[in-house]
Length: 404
Image 1 (spheres, rainbow, N blue to C red):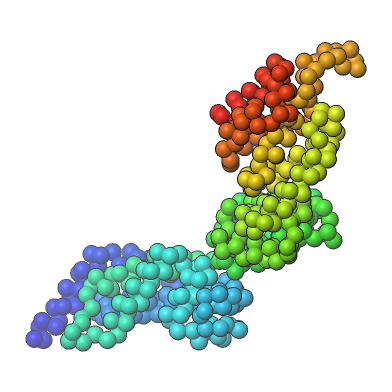
Image 2: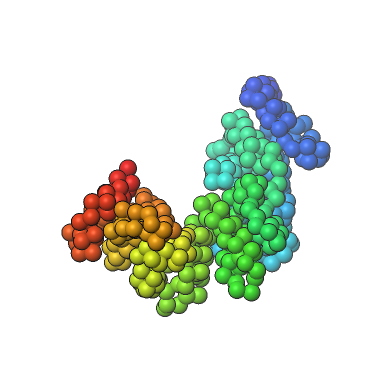
């Protein structure tokens, strides 16, 4: 019996060495390589693999705790609150977290990916089995190898993540000149946990709408939102949109509010009644100015503002046809003649408004070709204008453009 007990560790040693565990240990960060704990793990590995695994797992949890503190108590506290983990008020609270809660907290803060989180949970279960080895369960070498590989790959080989801070963003957007976020900041924001993203997003939305700030700062905040909306957690957008809806109340958004909501990716989350109210009000201004070429001096700002909120992308179906008719009439113009300079023009149209009108109509976010084509019969104004062959040619060029 004694000979058999002595053979098992020797057999384990050979299997462990063949599994590449020694190479894994070399991947541990220098910060941990220098610690006595890792040296003890190395010594134990060949004589007591089970104890070595437990010690390495404990080291990885200690490292995870340090990384949480490095990321910030504020982020940890917000993540704990949002995901109903034990409340966190200071660093000591985090020190008192249980191992399982520590793993959950690290995942909720974005310090562990979903696959890494699941691997660590599995390693945690194996570690518990190792602690309670008895006649019914005896840890195998494969269990030890799994723990080693997981702890090193997921935690001990990874540097602490320095999360993006609000001050990093403020420093850029509060510049006295037009600026944009660089690639490093965008990458840091993308990998930041939800609470930090939300803090930054709320600041940018609020600053974009603040009439007390200089125009250049508001513009920088708007451009930052435009860059960040595609890499933000969906819950960040939903939470900000909820607050945006409360800010607006029962009315529709103003033009500035609609522009910021579009740039921040919040417009789709607003109430449909609010969106419809905005488009109804905006069309009143379009109708007041008119689509005639004679109003060309007013078309630039009018249509650029419409384009900057997505054009027709979020226009409610009830409003869509009147917008399309106005834009088509602006583009096709009216019958030409001799200009005040003595030149002959086949069609009089707004040189300022027509290019923006066709750009808005050509946006592929909505399939409007049937509505445009239908204007030949549904709109008396369009039908009358199409009696002129030159205007008809411009009308059909719209169909060619939007059907490509």
